[in-house]
Structure formats: structure tokens, C-alpha cells
Image (cartoon, rainbow, N blue to C red):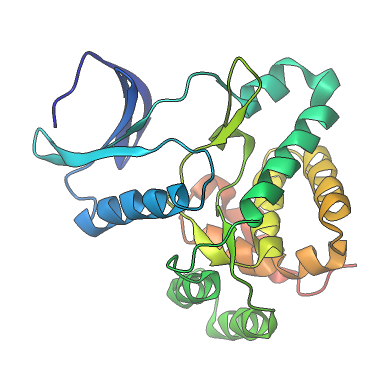
Length: 251
């Protein structure tokens, strides 16, 4: 893979993300599994096929011996940046954000892996909680309805790009599955709650209202998705997530 002049956007332990020409290029560490790189490209291509207007995969290749993915660049600001800069319009931004998530949930992609299977694997791999807690989480997961809606898995305002014309685009589909929309909403709620409870509550109220979903139903997913998030081993989130896992029933 050939790169034009590149500008570093994000640096993480396992990847670097650059702007290069009309593409965003993710360059992964040498130890990052090759299968994960190709899986991310495949997931993005599957979502393209649903008709959602997302940044398209351009190329998968190697740069300096490391695997890389080139994805179409979308010009604009993240919705997260806009929310921070214009707090007085937060409710309008949040309403648009929820409408976009509901548009994603309106799509299906039969070849995506199942959400419940992925969550089960994540919970089984979790060693921060004991076997009894894992059993309770897996029992709850098994009892939840199985759906086939497209779910982003990391739907938060930093993954929404707003163009100059106001059009919104969802990026970073590495965690996409087909499954239950309320589980996807529960994950989004947790991601908001990690930064502030007031914003998280605003999100959940709007999601439940616009989707005609009982708040209690979304909340039933919280211990399950908190356990899944815990497998990412972010030490800054650990105490917060453990509290959600410990809570079995919500009012």
C-alpha cells in the first residue's frame, strides 16, 4: 500500500490512524492479529451493502511490514466536538444522534455475526468476575430476545462525523453485529455514563421515547454489556463497570 503525505490523527497501543489524501489509514501494530484486520474490513464492507452511507473500504495492505486498512475520508467534525462546543443545543444534537442510531437499527445484514454469540464469548473470557457471576450473566443473556438488527457496538458521538451540509456519517464498524437494538442502546448508554450521568439519562430517555421501548428493557441489558466492555481491559473504566455488573435488578 502506498501512502501520500500523512497526518497522524490518533495513536493507540495497537494502531495509528492517519489522514492521507482522500483516505483514513489505520496502521496496526505488528502483533495485532491479521484476522482482526481483515475482519474489520469485511464488517465495513458488509455494512456498505446495507445501503447506509458510510466511509467505504478502499484497500487492505501492508505498510512497512504492518497490516493497514485504507477507508474513505469524510470531511467534517465529530458530533462529540459539536456537543462540547455548543452545550445549549445538546438536546437537538442528541435527538439527531438517536435518529441516526434508529436508522442503523432499521437495517439487516444476514452475514454479520450474531451479537448474542459475541457477548457470550466475551463473558466466558472474563476473569475479573467469578464463575457464579459469569453464570448469572450468561443466564440473563440467554433469556433475552434474539433479534437481527444491524448494531454498531460502539455507537457514540465520537464515531459520528457531521459534514458542512449537516449530513451525519457513522464511522468505525469494527464491532458491528446483528442483534438486539436495546443491547446496542445499553452499550451507548454506558459509554455516555462513563463521562457523565446527566447526558446518559438524556440519551436513554430520547432513545426509549423515539423507539417506543421500555426503559426497563434496555436496563436489563446493562450488566451484560458492562461485562463485554470490561473485556477491553481499560483500567480507567474497571471500577465503574464492575458496579454495573454487580447490580442484578434495576428499578
